[in-house]
Image (cartoon, rainbow, N blue to C red):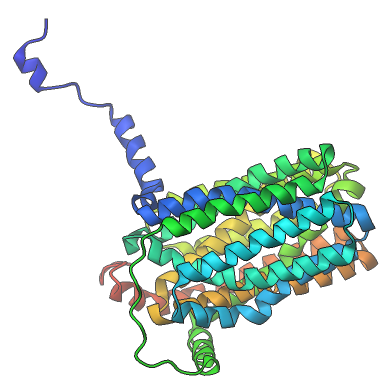
Length: 441
């Protein structure tokens, strides 16, 4: 029988349970913000459709043409607008309401996917249709990506949750990358690519609804606005006058130019090296997403931005090693494992660079700096796609990817040698913003 005294002293919860709850709260702390919860719900659905479309698009092009060069051309047209237009998008992001801009870009992306679905399902699709619609989506993404990246800080109620929000966003991207390619591989094999495009079009409704439901405080208007070109020049001087920002952007540009094009050539590896089908392609893309998801979980569980510089170095080494091993592998299991490592490296590198930039940048220049981030990471990729497509046609896909992996390893080593100086420059910024204390090492 229980006594009154026993009722007043309940059995304590086991320590390991409390620690588990604490780790969960740490990992999901950005979800305390209502706007960010809405964003995760809507974007999570939309991203699955996005990955389905990307896989279906690559397979459709390769099925129709059998050309690695045309895979590179389609990749080029979908990404070159980010190199040309992202800086302008950054200026707009620093001027206008980001939520309204994002509603417009998501609506346009919905239309692009719907048009693609119609021409494929009706059987009238030609390769020039795909190139043109890829260019259209590239223009939309050139504005969407830097605006969305700089909007993250407005969705979280506490700046302390910013790094966690960026990592959770990456978890969401690569969680979708785990699901989307697998579904796409099954659908392409059974009912064709058009259904994937139709599903992607419908998935944009979720993120549009989430953005519409957000409550965002109006931004204070600038008392004086300069000409767009003046503000763009101001952003260039600010970003490239800062050694930490400049070095991060240059590393991202190298990784994007030399390393990321391996993904354009995965259909070639799936069919010609591993002698597989669209299922094989889907599994390879899923392996990359698995590694990226692990990396996102790792970053989301970190308590602070301190130490991310060394994370970037290790990530570059993991990524370069992963794609180099993938390049020389003829064994499906080894290829899968190497892409897991590459996915982990790519995700942790990009998200860590994003976090450091968002932490040290001045608020009134956030949009422009994130546009240069987009320009380096997304905008350099089309040049890499063209180079990879041309090289693969001349020296082979395996040799092309191997060169890219070695280049990424070299970039990581160079960044490591710069790291002590970058830490000295960033330290006063962290102290000023309360991230570290004056006496911390």
